[in-house]
Length: 120
Image 1 (cartoon, helix red, strand yellow):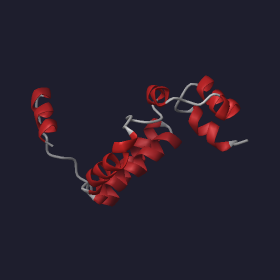
Image 2: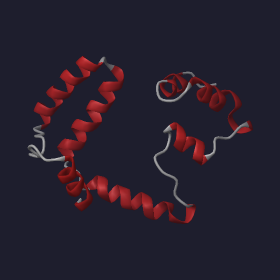
Image 3: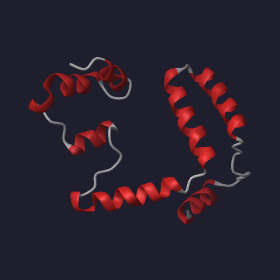
Image 4: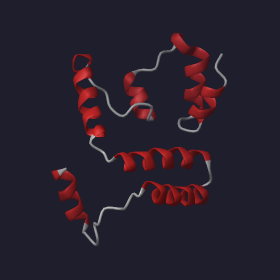
């Protein structure tokens, strides 16, 4: 019986769902729809399109600046391990170490930001 995995999962999804997953396992399988509702997965893709979608997403990730990706992943993990203020302070340090600078969006309106997002 796993011990560490349920601890981390219980930080993300309801305890009832963690209990069902680990105690009932194959006797009460989790549907793709329920996994989506719990936030364990981010989308449901038909099996025939799975590889194509995975490659598409991988291509997008590969285009992200490596310093930004490093800063993001490190900050994300630290945010879960540390308190909020300590995680923010650590994130600022990571930003300095990676040389990441925020995009110069200035004072764009929500409409302008949505238009930019739609273009990208």
